[in-house]
Image 1 (cartoon, one colour):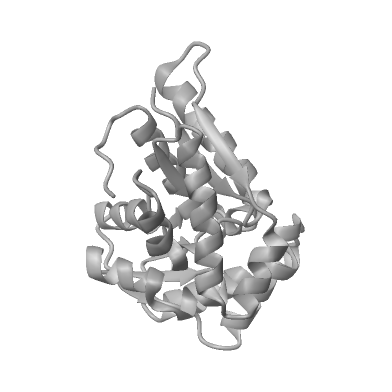
Image 2 (cartoon, rainbow, N blue to C red):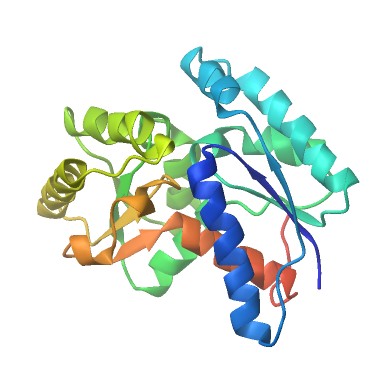
Length: 236
């Protein structure tokens, strides 16, 4: 089995799920006593969040690139960055290492394409919803039409993530707010919804909305298991 590096802590709430899902996936496929060969480097999210707020993506990219190099030096043959938002600096991370970075948007786009959908809603942090690094990859690589919430819904989605979910706080009121946001996106033509923040799965599930749900955390972990077991070629 290969060894995969998990670059997490953004936030640690979802990084826990990464470790669990990857190990569960390996155990289900191989059976017996099997588990995943993993290395995890979990950052202090306060430092990363401050760089996000300061719009200093170059410094954030340099910091995570150093962490990815540490995972490579430790024996990881590939890296999963356990966050959607920080894929904003994926090019800097990939440029710093000689091993592949498994991009979170790719298994998401593949799952949507395989489901035969063309127009999907994207929920995530303000950075993910408003900037092009994520939406643009889905458009360019998979030909998707990606909708994001209008204001004030965008702010509500973002605030729930940073004020509640990254702290492990899950509230019914926020779940209802998210369901209402999704309903408005469905009215605009969304055929499915991307949980484009690794914490949103703590709050929202397929049972909460009337269209297919694409949980990026689970899809990313499935791709990691594929790579671990050498079931698909890795792309740099």
